[in-house]
Amino acid sequence: MHTDSLELSKRMVGGQFLPEKYFHIAGINRSIQSLTYIPNEKQPVLFAGTDHGLFRSIDSGENWTESKQGLFSQDIRALAVDPKDPQQIYAGTPKGIFKSEDQGENWNEWFDQASGLTSVFINDLLIDPNQAETIYAATQGGLFVSHEGGDLWELAGNGTLKNKNIQTVQFSAAHPDQLIISTKNSVFRSNNDGGEWEKKWTELPNNISSVITLNTDPEFIFVGTKNGFYKSFNGGRNWIKDKNKNTKNIFSLAIDTKDNTGIFLTSTKGLFYSNNSGDTWLKITPHKKNLAKQGKLEISQINKILSITASNNQASLLLAGSETGLFISKNNGALWSFVNLGESGNTVPKKDFKMDLGKLVTEIHTGRFFGTYFYWLVDIATIGMIGLAISGLMIISYRKKIKKTKLSINKTLDEETEIDRIIDMSESFDNEDINDMVNHINIHLEKCKTIYKNPKTKDDTSKIDKHISILDTKIQLLAEQIKNFSTMSQDIASNQPFPTKTSHSDNRKKNLEN
Image (cartoon, rainbow, N blue to C red; front, side, top):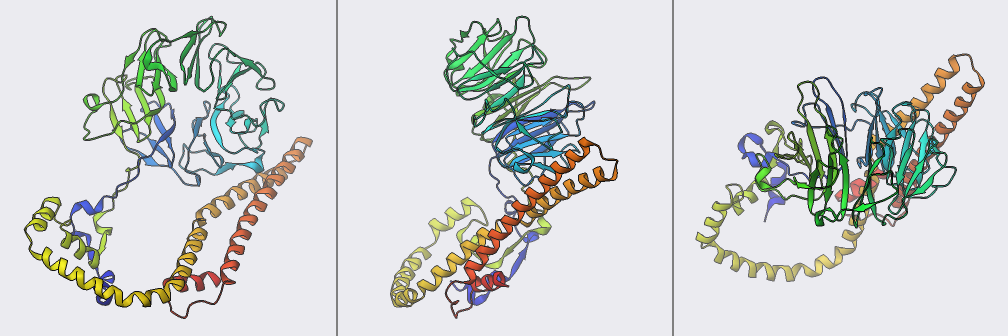
């Protein structure tokens, strides 16, 4: 009751005097939204994109580290690895596309509206295996293509797909020169690198979630929808609907990379595997009996599946991304392990942990410091509860006396709260974001300088003009954000005079004016 007068919050207790439970910070469960990997002679490098961060593992999923240097958008919707240069990785986010040239250590390139990517919310990415500089981006505003490694983008399809929400983009397994894209309600196919598109398989129902093809003759095609699983064994001329009740409301499909006839399917009923192109299904959903070394764990919806074929002495890997984390299996789903990426790394070193004395007193008084059982023992045994009841009556009387005083300062407190809210909003624009944007601008400057040093042809002049245009647009966007921040600061400064009472909000307000 007298923590302020005793200044208990200023007196700190070192971690060596505190139980271990205080050093672990419970993290949120991160939802897996994208999966990919880089083949490696020893072990594949795994990547998992979540709704709040990108994670990487170099030991088959045993340990994970977060990759975020320059990646100022943490909502990772799509991932793509350059098949000819595995050092280069692309990450699709709601703020555009980021590029790393060192396997995700740093993300030095950022492609947005200034690069021609007028729709920046990315759903899927695809790199041409024969021309690695050609990249396709499925966005909420159409399909975009870049023939310069992402530097410059244009809308594909001569406007046919403009403003369409493209969900997936892929090459046909049987016809590698053909592109296939899907929206929620339609499937389109192109025979000329996305120049023209033909609407296909109109007899399929709406709410399409996934499309996969097999390298067979004739082409095998599998489509997952909200209404069920559909398959065609003649290139889409005829379709068969799976009658299995477990294959309704499908979220994702994937091919078993070690068996061309194997298919993975995830639906509201769980995760299933078929080794005969969907004729029969085996349920391999992670559960308590096939989950290694786990306590209580809620099995949530599985959104993404990634199958990795074994090479040399490596074991095959099956990755299943769920709403709460990542499941990994080395035997095709017979046994699973679970990785909660939300709690990865959220442990504070004991030497760095401190607790103020006021908090410690509260923890001891309530019994939480010693554990739940001690709390209940003290709570039941102590007669002091009667004293607390009496003191409660005294507090009620005291509150009546100070009620009028509180009313007189409510207006001041409301103003301080509003000031704190506005300043918190301004502080949410992280300086790291500004630094990242400036770094991206500097990259384009270096590109311009490199071109200027060499003898200039007509193509060189065109590239100079494009990069200068990109640079100009990025500078304008950055200037606009700084202008908005300045305007917000001036609005705060123009409010009514500050309260004479010195408070935390006053100090923050004065600092902001300065």
